[in-house]
Length: 490
Image (cartoon, rainbow, N blue to C red):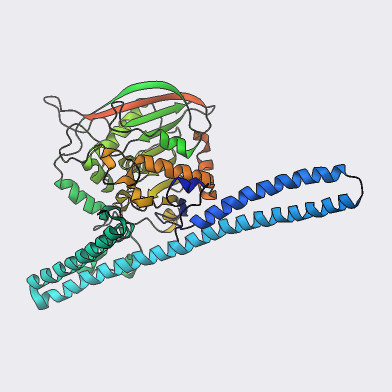
């Protein structure tokens, strides 16, 4: 269902042709259809060109047998042109309808996983009076052991296939993990005998037992508390032309390890006022004791928990210091933790967000207003998007355009940075190649999204400023109240 790209196409550099879906993190497996539609489009252009030249020749010929043959050939060419156009359009329609079916299948998977979790929790609760607390613990341990055995068996199978022990990059295990994370609340409600039928088909991350509450619990276990004062200062400023493509947006994403800083803000003047593009780096360190680095593991967990993280505060402070007005359009672009910050700013920041472009972010369950177009790029072998749970369903999920790709050899065959050596599918370079291939494929949903953020991609002149964020120690006698950026926790 996910064929390799034929040589010569945008996906020929490795991996499958990126598939596009409209609905959460759904991978619409339309690689072959996208390729065929693209090639039919090229063939149609060639046929149209030949038909145009033939029509010119027919006009120049006097009435004769030769003109009659030329007219017959022109009629055949025009018929072929129409058939190629019809076939290409049919393939595009089939891809979209196929995506609808995939959406239903994945909704079914979510429902089954939720039902199993609720049944397990409820069974343990019912058995408690019979077998006691100790027996319940034994049964629960048995369930955990069974899952562990299945993971080991799958890992051994994949190791035999690939020659590499890498369960963190196995699409099957990652999909299962996403379903487990999304079903934790159902298991708890089942144990409390509170699960309802509607709970099986909906997922509320902000609910009493949802992923946001789990994230809050984990955040409390981290060593570095959030909310202390930050230093957010500009480091470089230069003239720049606005990007003209989604690939150019990915190319401008900052590397948080650079001295220039984790945030890049571009300003472009227009007749109706300035427009802004904010690029946000991903996680800089996963160390629990990260010192003065706000783009750390604590900020990752707090972002998933929908609590204000130090990295999100740093982004908001940079935007304020740059002079972005609340009524001035802004496009948010982020990778990894930067993607999470982008959707949280769009959700809560109080800015006029004209679009969000995100790469490898744990954001599937974050629903943004209908007025904000969202494009997410994800890899099947990337663990990070999975940590956000399964994607939002319903209208919120359907508005989210998702570009998915399965990387050849899980991405391990491509040179990556040391920081992503164990998780090459999360590498920003890999995401840049994926969005470039998706644009070349010409999928109409990607084209439509690009059109929706077109005012930010007009090539006009502006300025680009990099911003560096650091935690600073409170001054004597001052309270670490989080500086000038304050937003109530949820």
